[in-house]
Image 1 (cartoon, rainbow, N blue to C red):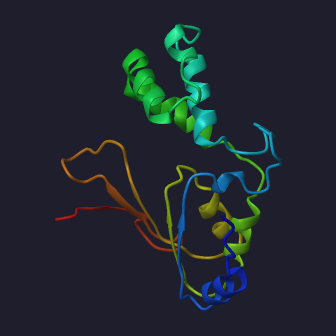
Image 2 (image 1 turned 135 degrees about the vertical axis):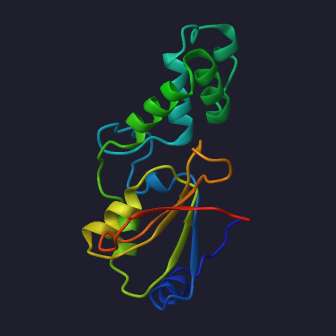
Length: 173
């Protein structure tokens, strides 16, 4: 089924600050050619991260891993954590997602919009934040951390760079 997306209408409403964008997995693939892994140019997709995790496992050639047609990121993350520990998993993922890559053209487009807008993203990277910063756009980021120092305080608010105390802990009640 083909769906005609009213792209111009959405873009116009976004420029007026009347649209909330929900960005899901794969946003970091914008600008990639089909089949291009381009590790030095692009962040990996979830399935590619799952493959990277699987390759680090001592028994990644085992029948269990070969039986997965498409490795599942949550399953591979959990297996990695069991083998090596949570801190090793965080270090590995930080290494994957913190490297600098080619600018995402969609994020650059968003950064050029002058009206305030809200974006909700399921992605783990900071490409959109970097695009907004490069364009001189102040922005707030609310995110969760996988583990918290205090029970229930895993929500964080990063205010614009010009604000004092850029990282604030939030508690939902």
